[in-house]
Amino acid sequence: MKITSAEFVKSAVWPNQYPPGILPEIAFVGRSNVGKSSLINALVGRKSLAKTSNTPGRTQLINFFTVNNRLFFVDLPGYGFAKVPQSVKKDWGAMIETYLRERRNLALVIFILDIRRDPGREDLSLRDWLKHYRIPYAVILTKSDKLSNQQALGQKKLIEKAMGKGASGNTILFSAKTGKGTEELWQFIEKHLAGLESI
Image 1 (tube, rainbow, N blue to C red):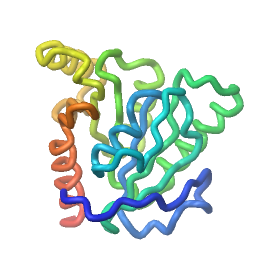
Image 2 (tube, rainbow, N blue to C red; image 1 turned 180 degrees about the vertical axis):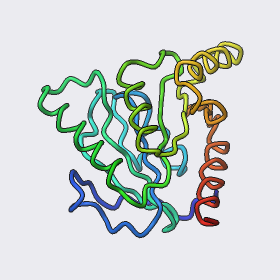
Image 3 (cartoon, rainbow, N blue to C red; image 1 turned 90 degrees about the vertical axis):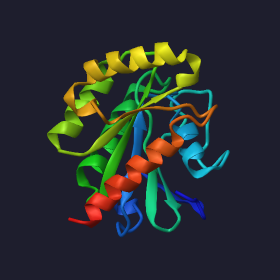
């Protein structure tokens, strides 16, 4: 997709703070420090649309971005090992779950995993949750440049097996450093949106 505009719109916590749900939304979710912001920036060809940080858990709000005035990217707070109080983590869980469960114009979830790590308990719980609510998702394996091509392909198979049937055929190797997977993911998103429009 040719990117003509990509703009931050607003941050939100609860549904009454979301922007109007008139465009399809692609939500990005994954563990803290998995490379979520770098993935968003790579997709839109910007270095700092989504703020990156070396500190896990820096994103504590739901951030909405318009892309080409045609769709929204939605950056959800990372889960996992962020050094924040347990009460905040609990609120994050409720914030993420409320968005995923109630947002009618949510078209697709980009489920982000670090290719160097096996899916953890929280990753598998999110997978089960998405399946329960029948929310379509693609699995993106970030930091693939950290492994050789053969290692990356082998790890991809292991992760697909751990994630189960829903991940097979919907898993993309990605690297923000090299750009690997950017075009493939855009093609996946556009094909998915086109399928929704034809319904």
